[in-house]
Length: 233
Image 1: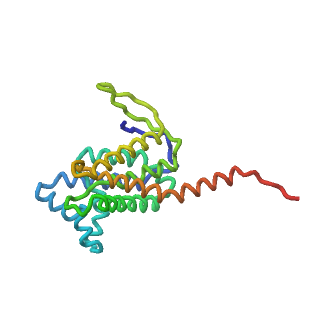
Image 2: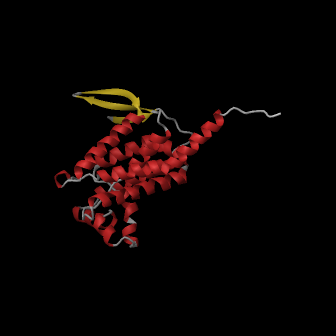
Image 3: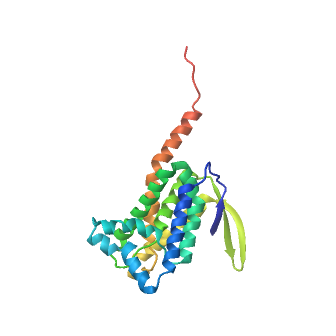
């Protein structure tokens, strides 16, 4: 399933979401302009390398890579998939949290996602790049905040592509189950691959935890509005 758009309008333009998208695209455009040697040097400087993070956890030069790696991508599909999900689901989360809180949420879930990957996969020398952990956090927030929203998706059926309107909870739930199955499979040496599945799972879990207070506040507000007023005499 490939989401195209949701049926969940926003109250204002998602400025932070748009800026994040533009930065990611510009960063990738710079990546593809580099020679192979320049690209390797670039990754060594700005990607999040688990072994370096474990060896020098408090080094400013290492800590900054927890942020910069979130704006780098390994290919057009990697970038395109992340930016599609960011635009479709991020605008509503930004609308609910507010711009500054959304930015903090995005960066926090991305950092936690990287740490989750390191915790499960160990201090690998393979650089980690991508916004997938932060996008996973956004999906978790969307699931909590808008459980009844629907999404228009493309469904490839052999050589035919069908359009369908399905619950966003189903799309996000299907996505998370896929990450979980792949993540469990990647724990064994035979299942190791090039996708940081546990970063996705960690980002999703972080998104749920960080969004929970907002969700609970919204539930309390709804209950207060539904409570009838009583006149005392």
